[in-house]
Length: 408
Image (cartoon, rainbow, N blue to C red; front, side, top):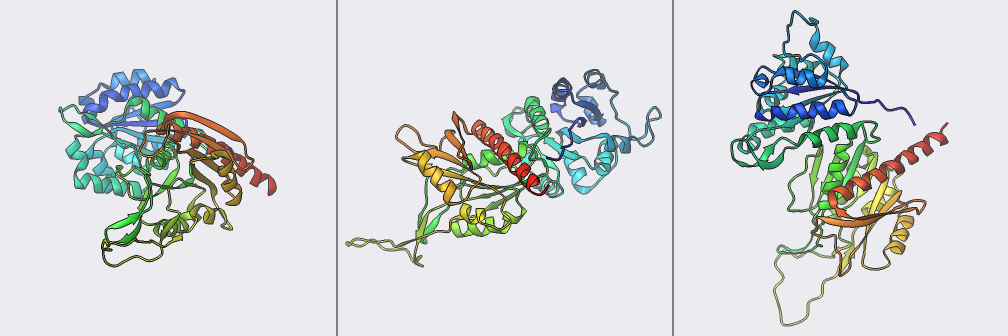
């Protein structure tokens, strides 16, 4: 396996928002975990936290001037080349707008224009500002240009409002940075399906299932935490749109199949977590089917097997499936793994005492191509997702190493 770049040098940009006081804790946590942190502050940031605090915690002077007689005249270039990651926390609506427009009128914006490092933004603002159409457009533009957005949390805000816009906790931001270090998903593309599919019978009725999409969305977030580029293809859910690189909403199994096959060539890893309908109506009525006194029969036909079709591509991604069973969970899941030629499968069970549908909790068994099994005990889906992705990373590295050895 090729050596991976160690993320060591962090430029922390601090802008003028009340959440700036949390930046000191971000510095402390990163330094504690052996990162080298240099802080760049805007003039407005100094209204909320004193540079001496950040200097003491980072063991470096704080940089705040584009032209400073005591520093290199090319400080923006020096910092841009030094950084492995540029993290801006808090990222105000102002800095988001400037970066989106390509402005470079101070040290922080100029080094962002000059750097080749990954740039992460941790937005922090009032809930109404976060929902503002211009802010949304700026965020979208930044994502398209490879900026990574650490989606703000929901909670109580300094102004007394409650809603989205609260900067992520320092511990969560630091964990995100630490998770990227040596991550096998750095620079990789992960394609994930989530949620149910809906197969119409007539204009008002359909065939579907109880899938909430939570597991797939949690898997997508776990992959983003590890530095992957995530493409999420999702059936209809009531969940908020996740902060992934590319989100593709679909309705039917045919639409999901088309979207997956169109994107499979871009993916290093494919995780088929969606609860795709196994059958769909043979014919769809153009008009509502009226209730009659007699019996009504609905003729169904098989849908396409998406995960199997991906696994049988000539240049397939590392392919992981999900298996939901009501009985003989392990045996049935192993049979699917072998028949569909998957690299791994995650087995779930539905029974009277447990159902993963519409629940925040789950318990699964991870089965590899060699039929090694790892049981992941009941936990919240966020933690289950991280454990699944950790196991996928191990198997993916073995898969890559095997491929490299074969070509050595």
